[in-house]
Image (cartoon, rainbow, N blue to C red; front, side, top):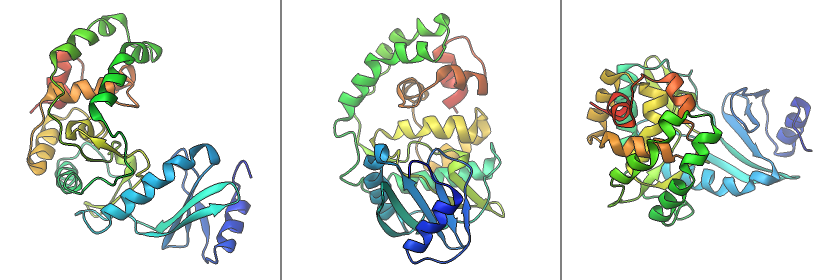
Length: 272
Protein backbone atom coordinates (compact mmCIF):
# COMPACT_ATOMS: atom_id res chain seq x y z
CA UNK A 1 0.00 0.00 0.00
CA UNK A 2 1.40 3.39 -1.00
CA UNK A 3 -1.64 5.28 0.28
CA UNK A 4 -4.14 4.43 2.97
CA UNK A 5 -7.87 4.40 2.34
CA UNK A 6 -10.53 3.97 5.00
CA UNK A 7 -10.89 0.34 3.91
CA UNK A 8 -7.12 -0.18 4.28
CA UNK A 9 -7.27 1.23 7.80
CA UNK A 10 -10.11 -1.15 8.70
CA UNK A 11 -8.02 -4.06 7.43
CA UNK A 12 -5.10 -2.92 9.56
CA UNK A 13 -7.41 -2.70 12.57
CA UNK A 14 -8.57 -6.26 11.98
CA UNK A 15 -5.02 -7.55 11.57
CA UNK A 16 -4.12 -6.05 14.93
CA UNK A 17 -7.11 -7.77 16.54
CA UNK A 18 -8.79 -4.49 17.46
CA UNK A 19 -12.44 -3.45 17.48
CA UNK A 20 -14.17 -0.14 17.01
CA UNK A 21 -15.10 2.32 14.31
CA UNK A 22 -12.20 3.72 12.28
CA UNK A 23 -12.13 7.50 11.84
CA UNK A 24 -9.26 9.37 10.22
CA UNK A 25 -8.03 12.60 11.81
CA UNK A 26 -7.88 15.24 9.10
CA UNK A 27 -4.99 17.27 10.55
CA UNK A 28 -1.36 16.32 10.13
CA UNK A 29 0.95 15.07 7.41
CA UNK A 30 0.84 11.39 8.49
CA UNK A 31 -2.18 9.03 8.45
CA UNK A 32 -3.65 8.86 11.95
CA UNK A 33 -6.86 6.98 12.79
CA UNK A 34 -9.05 6.74 15.86
CA UNK A 35 -9.97 3.14 16.61
CA UNK A 36 -13.10 3.38 18.71
CA UNK A 37 -13.08 5.76 21.66
CA UNK A 38 -9.91 4.55 23.34
CA UNK A 39 -7.15 4.01 20.76
CA UNK A 40 -5.24 5.86 18.05
CA UNK A 41 -3.24 4.22 15.25
CA UNK A 42 -0.50 6.38 13.72
CA UNK A 43 1.35 5.19 10.61
CA UNK A 44 4.60 6.08 8.84
CA UNK A 45 5.54 5.21 5.23
CA UNK A 46 9.02 3.71 4.62
CA UNK A 47 10.70 7.07 3.98
CA UNK A 48 9.73 8.22 7.48
CA UNK A 49 10.44 5.05 9.50
CA UNK A 50 13.37 6.82 11.14
CA UNK A 51 10.90 9.06 13.02
CA UNK A 52 9.26 6.19 14.89
CA UNK A 53 11.96 5.61 17.55
CA UNK A 54 11.71 9.27 18.57
CA UNK A 55 7.90 9.14 18.84
CA UNK A 56 8.06 5.96 20.91
CA UNK A 57 10.91 7.03 23.19
CA UNK A 58 9.40 10.42 24.00
CA UNK A 59 5.93 8.98 24.51
CA UNK A 60 7.33 6.50 27.03
CA UNK A 61 9.48 9.13 28.73
CA UNK A 62 6.62 11.58 29.20
CA UNK A 63 3.71 9.33 30.14
CA UNK A 64 2.50 10.26 33.62
CA UNK A 65 5.17 12.95 34.05
CA UNK A 66 3.32 16.09 32.96
CA UNK A 67 0.37 18.05 34.35
CA UNK A 68 -1.22 17.58 30.90
CA UNK A 69 -2.14 14.05 29.70
CA UNK A 70 -0.01 12.46 26.98
CA UNK A 71 -0.73 9.24 25.07
CA UNK A 72 0.17 5.87 26.55
CA UNK A 73 2.05 3.51 24.23
CA UNK A 74 0.24 0.23 23.54
CA UNK A 75 2.21 -1.29 20.68
CA UNK A 76 4.55 -0.57 17.79
CA UNK A 77 5.63 -2.58 14.78
CA UNK A 78 5.30 -3.05 11.02
CA UNK A 79 2.24 -3.66 8.87
CA UNK A 80 3.44 -4.33 5.34
CA UNK A 81 5.56 -1.28 4.49
CA UNK A 82 3.98 0.89 7.17
CA UNK A 83 5.47 1.37 10.62
CA UNK A 84 2.80 1.93 13.24
CA UNK A 85 2.35 3.12 16.78
CA UNK A 86 -0.81 2.18 18.67
CA UNK A 87 -1.51 4.54 21.57
CA UNK A 88 -4.26 5.61 23.92
CA UNK A 89 -6.64 8.25 22.63
CA UNK A 90 -6.77 11.71 24.19
CA UNK A 91 -10.03 13.63 24.17
CA UNK A 92 -10.88 17.28 23.77
CA UNK A 93 -10.80 20.02 21.17
CA UNK A 94 -8.10 22.35 19.91
CA UNK A 95 -7.81 25.32 22.31
CA UNK A 96 -8.58 28.84 21.16
CA UNK A 97 -5.44 30.94 21.44
CA UNK A 98 -4.10 33.34 22.53
CA UNK A 99 -5.65 32.84 25.96
CA UNK A 100 -4.12 33.72 29.32
CA UNK A 101 -5.23 30.59 31.18
CA UNK A 102 -4.13 28.28 28.37
CA UNK A 103 -0.79 30.09 28.34
CA UNK A 104 -0.38 29.46 32.07
CA UNK A 105 -1.06 25.76 31.58
CA UNK A 106 1.39 25.56 28.68
CA UNK A 107 4.05 27.21 30.83
CA UNK A 108 3.48 24.70 33.63
CA UNK A 109 3.52 21.83 31.16
CA UNK A 110 6.80 22.95 29.59
CA UNK A 111 8.44 23.41 32.98
CA UNK A 112 7.69 19.76 33.75
CA UNK A 113 8.61 18.56 30.25
CA UNK A 114 12.03 20.20 30.41
CA UNK A 115 12.80 18.38 33.66
CA UNK A 116 12.36 14.97 32.01
CA UNK A 117 15.64 13.34 31.00
CA UNK A 118 15.95 13.42 27.19
CA UNK A 119 15.88 9.87 25.75
CA UNK A 120 19.19 8.73 24.28
CA UNK A 121 17.68 8.41 20.81
CA UNK A 122 17.13 12.16 20.49
CA UNK A 123 19.20 14.33 18.19
CA UNK A 124 21.26 16.39 17.92
CA UNK A 125 24.05 14.90 19.98
CA UNK A 126 26.04 18.13 19.56
CA UNK A 127 23.83 21.21 19.95
CA UNK A 128 26.60 23.66 19.04
CA UNK A 129 27.25 21.81 15.78
CA UNK A 130 23.53 21.84 14.98
CA UNK A 131 23.36 25.60 15.61
CA UNK A 132 26.41 26.19 13.42
CA UNK A 133 24.89 24.17 10.58
CA UNK A 134 21.56 25.98 10.80
CA UNK A 135 23.33 29.32 10.92
CA UNK A 136 25.40 28.56 7.82
CA UNK A 137 22.26 28.02 5.76
CA UNK A 138 19.97 30.50 7.48
CA UNK A 139 20.00 33.42 5.02
CA UNK A 140 19.55 31.15 2.02
CA UNK A 141 16.73 29.23 3.70
CA UNK A 142 14.86 32.44 4.48
CA UNK A 143 15.48 33.77 0.97
CA UNK A 144 13.91 30.60 -0.47
CA UNK A 145 10.90 31.32 1.71
CA UNK A 146 10.52 34.82 0.26
CA UNK A 147 11.85 36.90 3.14
CA UNK A 148 12.62 40.39 1.84
CA UNK A 149 16.14 41.79 1.53
CA UNK A 150 15.33 44.32 4.28
CA UNK A 151 15.25 41.42 6.72
CA UNK A 152 17.81 39.13 5.08
CA UNK A 153 20.56 41.72 5.39
CA UNK A 154 19.93 41.99 9.15
CA UNK A 155 20.33 38.28 9.90
CA UNK A 156 24.15 37.85 9.96
CA UNK A 157 24.80 40.81 12.27
CA UNK A 158 21.90 39.89 14.55
CA UNK A 159 23.12 36.30 14.95
CA UNK A 160 26.70 37.53 15.50
CA UNK A 161 25.46 39.65 18.42
CA UNK A 162 23.46 36.91 20.18
CA UNK A 163 25.32 34.54 22.49
CA UNK A 164 23.84 31.04 22.06
CA UNK A 165 26.45 29.29 24.17
CA UNK A 166 26.24 27.75 27.66
CA UNK A 167 23.42 25.30 26.92
CA UNK A 168 22.16 22.50 29.17
CA UNK A 169 20.24 20.34 26.71
CA UNK A 170 16.64 19.56 27.68
CA UNK A 171 13.93 17.44 26.12
CA UNK A 172 12.19 19.61 23.52
CA UNK A 173 8.82 18.94 21.92
CA UNK A 174 9.76 21.67 19.36
CA UNK A 175 6.21 22.12 17.99
CA UNK A 176 4.09 23.23 20.94
CA UNK A 177 1.20 24.76 19.04
CA UNK A 178 -2.56 24.72 19.37
CA UNK A 179 -2.96 21.90 16.80
CA UNK A 180 -0.90 19.61 19.07
CA UNK A 181 -2.92 20.46 22.18
CA UNK A 182 -6.39 19.49 23.39
CA UNK A 183 -8.63 21.10 25.99
CA UNK A 184 -11.81 20.25 27.85
CA UNK A 185 -13.73 22.78 29.93
CA UNK A 186 -10.86 25.26 29.92
CA UNK A 187 -8.23 22.72 30.98
CA UNK A 188 -5.59 21.25 28.72
CA UNK A 189 -6.46 17.60 28.21
CA UNK A 190 -3.71 16.49 25.85
CA UNK A 191 -0.29 17.03 24.30
CA UNK A 192 0.70 14.80 21.39
CA UNK A 193 2.82 14.41 18.24
CA UNK A 194 6.38 13.70 19.38
CA UNK A 195 8.27 12.68 16.24
CA UNK A 196 9.81 16.21 15.85
CA UNK A 197 11.24 16.08 19.41
CA UNK A 198 14.88 17.05 19.96
CA UNK A 199 17.38 17.71 22.72
CA UNK A 200 18.71 21.26 23.00
CA UNK A 201 18.40 24.75 24.44
CA UNK A 202 15.19 25.48 26.32
CA UNK A 203 14.72 28.75 24.42
CA UNK A 204 14.24 26.79 21.18
CA UNK A 205 10.92 25.49 22.58
CA UNK A 206 9.49 28.98 22.86
CA UNK A 207 9.70 29.71 19.15
CA UNK A 208 6.68 27.49 18.48
CA UNK A 209 4.96 28.34 21.76
CA UNK A 210 5.38 32.07 21.16
CA UNK A 211 4.23 32.07 17.55
CA UNK A 212 1.46 29.47 17.76
CA UNK A 213 0.18 29.75 21.36
CA UNK A 214 0.73 33.29 22.68
CA UNK A 215 0.86 34.79 19.16
CA UNK A 216 2.53 38.05 20.17
CA UNK A 217 0.06 38.77 22.96
CA UNK A 218 2.35 40.05 25.70
CA UNK A 219 -0.11 39.32 28.53
CA UNK A 220 -0.22 35.69 27.43
CA UNK A 221 3.56 35.54 26.97
CA UNK A 222 4.13 36.91 30.50
CA UNK A 223 1.59 34.45 31.93
CA UNK A 224 3.40 31.57 30.21
CA UNK A 225 6.81 32.75 31.43
CA UNK A 226 5.60 33.23 35.00
CA UNK A 227 4.19 29.70 34.99
CA UNK A 228 7.35 28.31 33.40
CA UNK A 229 9.42 29.93 36.16
CA UNK A 230 12.16 31.29 33.92
CA UNK A 231 12.17 34.10 31.37
CA UNK A 232 14.36 33.59 28.29
CA UNK A 233 16.33 36.36 26.66
CA UNK A 234 14.02 37.48 23.83
CA UNK A 235 16.97 37.88 21.47
CA UNK A 236 17.97 34.24 22.01
CA UNK A 237 14.43 33.11 21.21
CA UNK A 238 14.44 35.28 18.10
CA UNK A 239 17.78 33.78 17.06
CA UNK A 240 16.25 30.31 17.36
CA UNK A 241 13.21 31.54 15.40
CA UNK A 242 15.65 32.22 12.55
CA UNK A 243 17.49 28.91 13.05
CA UNK A 244 14.54 26.61 13.73
CA UNK A 245 14.35 23.53 11.50
CA UNK A 246 10.96 24.69 10.19
CA UNK A 247 11.61 28.43 10.30
CA UNK A 248 9.65 30.53 7.82
CA UNK A 249 10.16 34.12 8.90
CA UNK A 250 8.14 35.54 6.03
CA UNK A 251 5.11 33.54 7.15
CA UNK A 252 5.77 34.29 10.83
CA UNK A 253 5.78 38.01 10.11
CA UNK A 254 2.42 37.75 8.42
CA UNK A 255 0.94 36.27 11.59
CA UNK A 256 2.76 38.23 14.30
CA UNK A 257 3.02 41.91 15.35
CA UNK A 258 5.09 44.18 13.13
CA UNK A 259 8.38 45.99 13.80
CA UNK A 260 11.26 47.46 11.81
CA UNK A 261 14.21 45.38 13.00
CA UNK A 262 14.97 41.91 14.36
CA UNK A 263 15.83 43.45 17.74
CA UNK A 264 12.44 45.13 17.87
CA UNK A 265 10.69 41.95 16.75
CA UNK A 266 12.46 40.00 19.49
CA UNK A 267 11.00 42.25 22.18
CA UNK A 268 7.59 42.49 20.53
CA UNK A 269 7.21 38.73 20.03
CA UNK A 270 9.18 37.26 22.93
CA UNK A 271 9.56 40.03 25.52
CA UNK A 272 7.79 40.68 28.80
